[in-house]
Length: 88
Image (cartoon, rainbow, N blue to C red; front, side, top):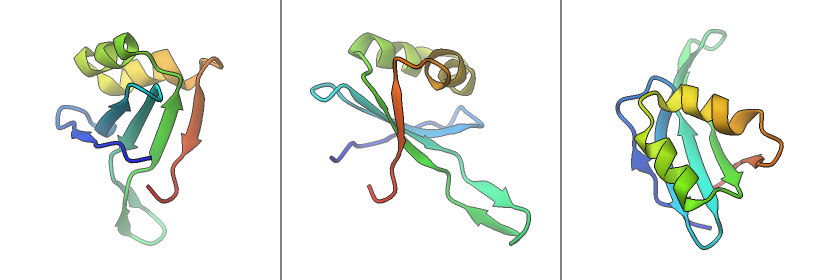
């Protein structure tokens, strides 16, 4: 499944968001991070979250703090399936 990501420049945690309304899948790219052991920058993880309604995605896009919204709305809610995307 190909989901185009919208760059998010206003967040320290979320680098990109995308949505497939037919599949009700939201894709979240987290920001790159500095790996202390290798002392190199590593790409942020990519996850699919489902099922996400259009309204939930729109609320996420409109949220002032994308990271806080993700954690409060999706991360600990067992009604969503969150899957790490290895090879998008």
